[in-house]
Image 1 (tube, rainbow, N blue to C red):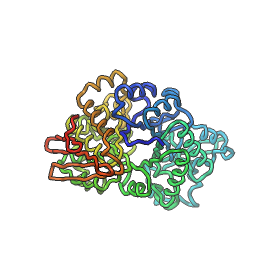
Image 2 (cartoon, rainbow, N blue to C red):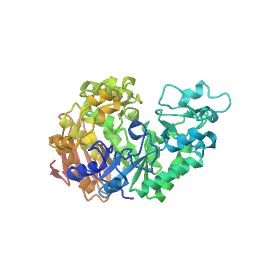
Image 3 (tube, one colour):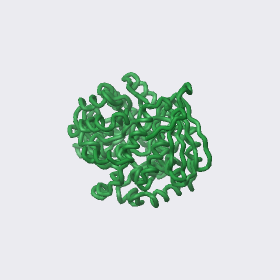
Image 4 (tube, one colour):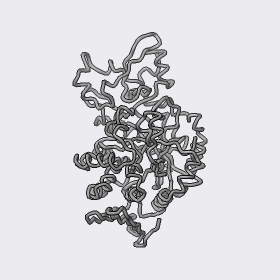
Length: 479
């Protein structure tokens, strides 16, 4: 597989330019040294949730381009695709066939019949309360078949996203064929979206169900390896779950880092962050921002409840145009444990603080991911937010090529690109290398060395004024 230890951009196919071809032109023209890989958020035909309700994985949505455009991107960048392991669109061929033909459909067992799932006289109140769910009601949707009969089907997320039955041959074949398509079209990594929800089992909370979840992961890993792919399970929950997954030989995400860095810059207390960095695995992807909100649950017990509360309060107090309402039901927020904002606005649109946050990220163990809005130090998009009443759209601005060119003139963006270029070019960030910490109240240093300790990079930080210096083998590096 074509995976390299270089910064990965996260972007929608139509957010840096209007399609995949324009994305390639913009990246190759202005970001070539700063970006090594791209997580292209879902580019398949979809009926909702900004691509996360896919109809199929065999096609590229025509409005974004074609498989040729994807393959052209792969010539210059390693690529990550999404596999929505938990669900498929209501508008998919498979589900529409089931609606038309009921039990006679070859896809009838692809979806989870809520009533057949439960034993007689269940579910009871305790069963429903036990389920780890994203709604304030039982997670099913009633559908009407062509013959007029009604079925209740498991439905964890939005109305367009019906859950898949992973215990059936037809579903496993569907997933296998999807992985083959990804491989044929130049993917390197497959992100397993919402994978912890995928296993449903009686008398559990239906989230990260052990030991079944490990069988699922191992089966997918085996199939991925046959197709020269790496899988990346995505999970937003207590950090110990990701820790388990990593210890079992999988790349994972560091979703705790965003709130930890905010707490550090707000409080001038680096100790929780530095302790976390020393404990973190190298084989992971780090984030400060993604297409979703900032995760709060991910940092529980890394920060105390009081520290989390402080960080959240300071975010709303210091952040530019960050309001609690934007992360509420009024703005269609699906997850009460996420805060909707751009990272730049969360730091009060302070250039020094933002660059320091990114410097900490590139020195953290793992491969950095940078969301496209963060790449341009983007502010909260209140116009798009109010137009759509979708909280997460505050961090989903659509950039035209002209806008990109204007943003590139800002010193904070130019310096960020130099930081990312330094990260990509410096061998000290070897994933088989080491990290060490020097801490002195609100001053600290992070040191990264390659596997044989022949090359060392150092970040010296003064939280008192958000100053930092970079060194390579004791020589200062200018950005």
